[in-house]
Amino acid sequence: MSSPTLAARRPEILLAVLLTLCLVGLSLQVRRPGGRTAGESWLLAAASPFVDAVTALRSGAAEVGTWASSRRTLLAANRALSAEVERLEGDLLRLRDAERDKARLLELLAAQPAPPPGTAPARLIAIESSGPFRTGLLDRGAADGVRVDGVVVAPAGLVGRVIAVGPHTARLQLLSDKTAAAGVLLPRSARAAVAKGDGKGGIAVEYVPTIEPVERNDLIVSSGTDGVYPGGLPVGRVSALAKKSTLFWDIQLEPAADPRRETMVFVLPPVKRSDVTGGPGVEARR
Amino acid sequence: MKAVRVGIGLSLAVLLTLAAGALRVPAPPDFFLLVVADMARGGAVVPAMLAGLPAGLLEDGLTGPGHLLGLHAFTKILVGYLLATIGSRTIVEKPLAVGGLLAGAVLAEAATLTFLLWVLRGDVLAPAGWILLGRALSTGLVGGALHAGSRVPWRQRREARRRMRLT
Image 1 (tube, chains in turn green, cyan):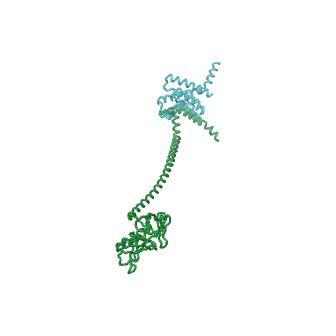
Image 2 (cartoon, chains in turn brown, cyan; image 1 turned 45 degrees about the horizontal axis):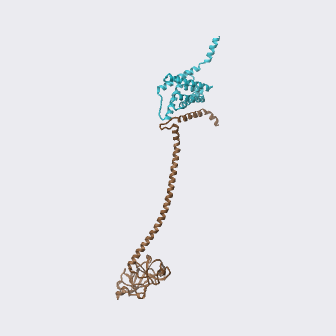
Image 3 (cartoon, rainbow over the protein chains, first blue to last red; image 1 turned 180 degrees about the vertical axis):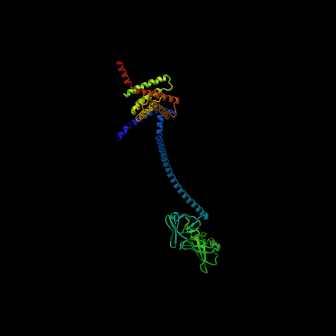
């Protein structure tokens, strides 16, 4: 089928071949103004897309290589920086904690410019409540000089007393414990009274006659007469005041030192019986 | 046989071209085209093209611009193809028609040549108009005359004269 067609087209094919040969021969002879022959120019023109494509591929590959290298470098740098940031954030948190502890210590030391010998700093690391009982856990124990009946104070005021001591930890009874009690003084009359924990986080002052002047927001301090707590330490502020009966006030205190917020405390050595005084209020009364 | 004819024709064309140059003929006929046209008679496409190739190469060697071998070969092959194609589809017997066809072939070749030079060199190198017309005219005249001469039964006339001398 194709043979007759090719035979019929033989003159045209021959013509095309001859003309092409002539053109090729001419293109190899004609020199363009740039010095190249027409054949070279045509060859370059025909090859330029291929050359451009190869050049583009090479450039693309180089860019990809550069990008991959940069990416590797950037990823490594990013990992290193992330680790550095993580480390620095940890350092920052530690520094902030240290700064806060330092500020609290300075505040505490300012409140107690001359702490008694045997005073040990400690962290209040846990607060526990079981029914009416409120206790805490310190990170210092007998190895650090903490003893039973040691007085736990915070910069804001009295926190409680040590009731059990381990080698490196100690358990304290908070003032808000239902079974805790402390001798206190009313600020306006210097009258002694007894503060007891209400088992709910607050403190109640009992048996204060209604003839005693008491106002809300009065600061109640320890009296030092109970043989447990030294005198003059803030116990709490009057948050609620009501007449329980015609004879006594029903006084509710907001603890001066909130155990839930205090983390840095001092453990004072137990009060000696011989050191028990009436406190400033008692002295005032005397 | 055709190859010998082509060889003789091209030899004559070379000689006549050189002679025309020596005589400073302003518009000499294209003798190489006449050889190609001779081979294209009767619609012989392939012989015409195959004759156009050496004819054009010879013309390039003689008259073409330097270092452009193949320029006239291209045009001669193309013109040979055209002439043979026309000859195969029409009957061109009158000398005037043959002359006109050859003149047209010269013009077509010149146009092709100009186009080819423009393609190859990038600039238009058109020949002078009057020289081109003169070349076309002279080629047509010579071609028509040769065609007319070829139609004369020279052999029969010679035989007749010989018989008359013998008798």
